[in-house]
Image 1 (cartoon, one colour):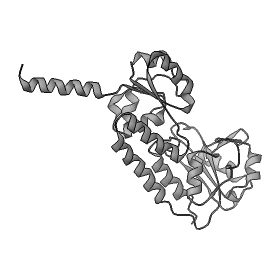
Image 2 (cartoon, helix red, strand yellow; image 1 turned 60 degrees about the vertical axis):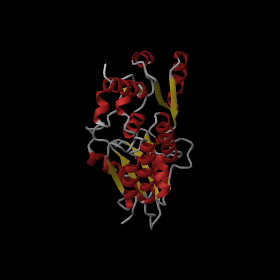
Image 3 (spheres, one colour; image 1 turned 180 degrees about the vertical axis):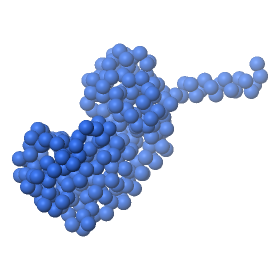
Image 4 (spheres, one colour; image 1 turned 90 degrees about the vertical axis):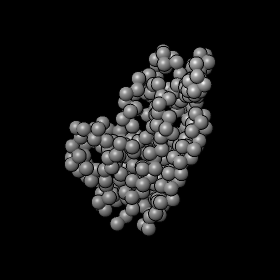
Length: 273
């Protein structure tokens, strides 16, 4: 066997040993792994991992709140990465001597620290630094609002506001973006990261601006015109000033490196004319 052939075999084996076999337990983590240019090391992911498109071809190991242990083990992972709500699942995997990593993806700072930690864990520190820098640049690009005002960010578009309305509370990246823009989150004083409001609560909070995070992909049958009419029927400053808007982007709810896009989009939405 020639020296050249031996070298090629050695390089192949080194590359084989270097690669991880990663299972991601959430869409956010899947996005970060692809952002770190390690998508080729993913062998399984959770449901709703839709970005990038390559992620849709990966085997599903279950829902991101209740992954299936047997399906995870079937892929013989060298590393399983989950979020704080996956703690129980990750602890069970320790019995099988599988390396695990828990990421906290709540605030913008959490996201940046988690990208750095995951990048270090899978030897992608240079790529991680680039992603973190993109987020930092998005923050620096925010112009402080010349007319600070109170903001309510709502999850999902509804025609009937009599049922529970989910909003962005404290200790979450939406709250960070509101504050970075120089504005005030009307739900920041509430105990929950995602408080559930009644329409009476919204009237009492009286926000000066309401931003509704809508996804046509997951809410295709909502009558947008009728839903907006319901919001404008509430006696709030936002309705009076015609400051109720719908934002429909696929990245808005995902705490990954694409939070840089969310920062830019929502900061622009919060700029008063």
